Image 1 (cartoon, rainbow, N blue to C red):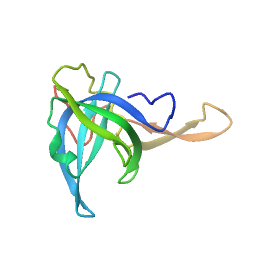
Image 2: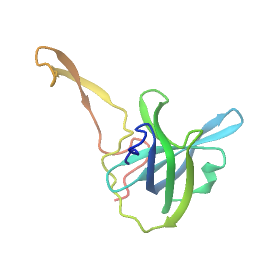
Image 3: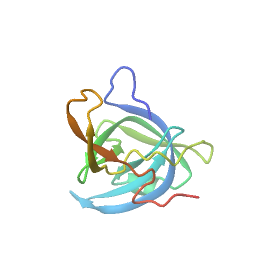
Image 4: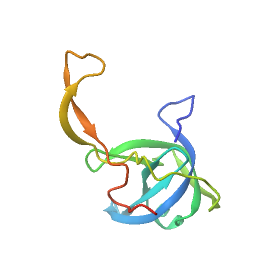
Length: 139
């Protein structure tokens, strides 16, 4: 899930739709859904809006253009098309992907440890689960 060289805020990628959309709710008369997408490097929760919720199924290869990462519902990282981004189905079942690591897993702060940048300071260490808390692993 690489950012473009020109603008580090945008993500252009081909993604495999691992799990279909789960409805989160309705905002401003538009449905909001959550799905899980992956590429050969990682998985991430993908936020869909309106007609996007019904546009993709598990196994679809989705081309995301000018997508953005943002935090939604607390501290959870999501990938979404946003206002300027676009999603388009470009294939089915023809892409290698990984299930871990999942970049959307909420960080659970654990114990304190030395700051790698300055050992004189203490910081909380993050604990990450490799799998999604929303979608079960495929295997």
